[in-house]
Length: 340
Ligand code: PMV
Image 1 (cartoon, rainbow, N blue to C red):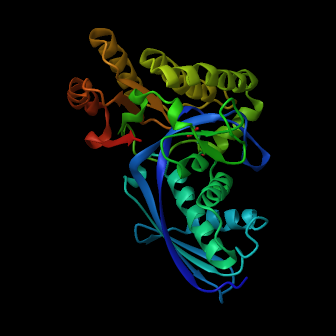
Image 2 (image 1 turned 90 degrees about the vertical axis):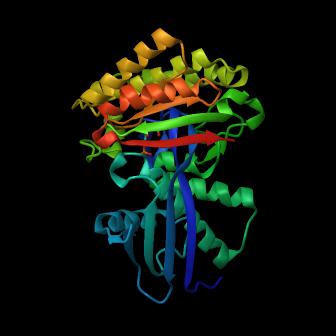
C-alpha cells in the first residue's frame, strides 16, 4: 500500500463506568470486566494531519495551545502500536484536539481523547490499506484505543458497553463490545448523568499509578472476583429494570473503587470534603423522598449524579440546584445524558 499526506477528523464521547475497571496486567489486559454508559455530549473532536514525507514526530494542540507532554505520550503510544499499524512511525503528525467539556473537570478526557485518536488512525489505515466492514473498523479502533487508555476502548460504542471477558456475549479483554440492546429494560435507555465539578485541579495520583498499586493491594484478588460476580446481578437488573438494585450495585462499585485506593500502599484518597458532603446529601434525599437519585465516582473527586428521565426528574433537578451545587467550585456542573 502507499502512504501519502492525509488529514482526518473524528469525534469520540467519554464514558462512565458502572462496574469499574481498576487493576490491569501487561498490555492493558484488565484484571476484571467492566461496563459503562457512553455519554452523549462530553466529546473530544480531533483532527489529525499526517505528513508522510517528514521523519516521525508528533505535535499536539489542545484547544489551540501546544501541549508538549501530551505529544510525548502520543509518541510513546504510536511506538507501542507499530506492531499493529506498520506505517505509524513513517511520518509527522499534527494533532489538534478540543473537548466539548471543561478541560480541568476531571471528566475522563483520556477515554474520549484516545478514542478519537484511535478512530483517526483507523481512518488513515483504511485510506492506505483498504476499507474493512464498519463493524470490523470499530472493533479495531476499540482495540487500539485500549492500548492508549483502557477505559477508552468502551467509548467506541453507544449505550451500555462491556470490556473484559465476562458472561456478556462476545466480550473480550482486547476490545469492548456493545451490551445487547434487547436485553436492556427501557428505564436504563434514557438516563441522566450530571457531573458535579467538586474540584477542578489536577489529581494527586494518576490512574496509571492507581492501577499499578493494585498489584500489591492485599484486597485486589477479592475485588477482581467481586467485579466478575457483579456481572450476574447486573445482567438481571438490566433486563428486569430493577432500579433499586441498580442503585445499590452502582454506588457499591463507586465506593469500592475508592476503598481500593485507601487500602493501597501508599494509601491515597481522591475524594474531597465536597464529595462526601454530596454523597451524604444524596442518601438523605433518597431516604426522605424515595426518588431515584444516586451517584457514581470516577478516579477523582467529582460526583456523577445519575437519575432516570422518567417523570420524577424535576424534583431531583431542583434538589441538585439548591442543595448540591454549593459543594462545587464555581457552581460547576456538566449536564449530560444517555439515550439509545
Ligand atoms: O482508562 P484508565 O487507565 O484511565 O482507567 C480509568 C479507570 C476508571 O475510570 C477509574 C474506571 C473505569 O472503568 O472507567
